[in-house]
Amino acid sequence: MKKIADVHNVEVAQLPVAWAIAKGTLPILGVTKVRHVEDAVKAADLVLSPDEIKTLEELADKAEINTVRVWEKEMK
Image (cartoon, rainbow, N blue to C red; front, side, top):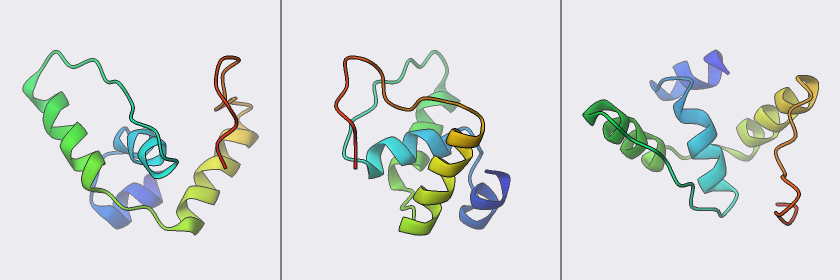
């Protein structure tokens, strides 16, 4: 994830937000500080390539992170 973040000059924490947007969702973020809003703006402006999206999903699979919750439809 760090490599992808470095390519885009963003923080690793911004990648999941950018990924969710790339998948056609609108993430609801909790912000308590100005920098959280600034990070969200950077994430919203970040355009991930199809290969980067695939890499993030593969990393999630390897870490056994389920990116689909029981109430969600599978995102393709």
